[in-house]
Length: 226
Image 1 (cartoon, rainbow, N blue to C red):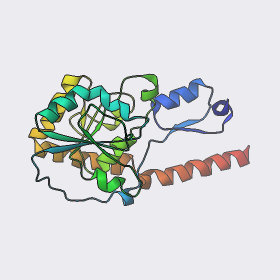
Image 2: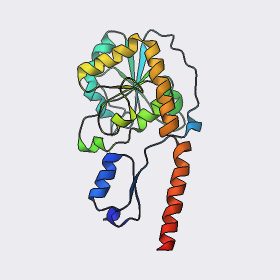
Image 3: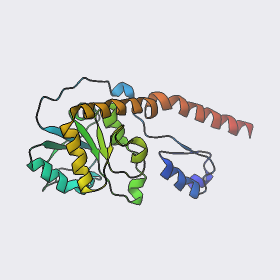
Image 4: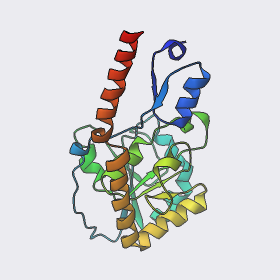
């Protein structure tokens, strides 16, 4: 009812926009999730360790998504190739998985993210997940960190396979994607640089804040005229 009677509905992706339209909304625009580039300054980082750090960020409500690739995490950890980290997971999460939990705070999240070599976003292909807006991917990409994501919802738009990141559906695809980045540091750098450029052009506050201001001004003008 709210969307049907609203003068404007702003949706974070195509899937949500379609939901708004189907609910009767007459004026729907898409504004993606964005980050403030001023909070994500570029750093030159060199990994001198043999193990690659793989990171995830979220909350206790979403940390169960890492179970989607539990067998991959166990296998690659046992091979001593990767260290896995989860920012914002619950204290009792991952009792059977070799994942180091890191507390989340707004003040520390940027510094913690920049310690990762690879950022991941595994999710199932279900209605709720199709509505997600890929914020963690955009955070990783802003830090020039190569990403691997499930090809669900807006992830497909944010991550261009082999250009701004990698997409992986099955356990074997996740395994192959992680190993390909492990063995090729230049490929990691390539994806990371492309990811940052994508965020600067399409997913930054600096790009969308003026657009939002214009949208709101036009909305007010239309109401005054009517």
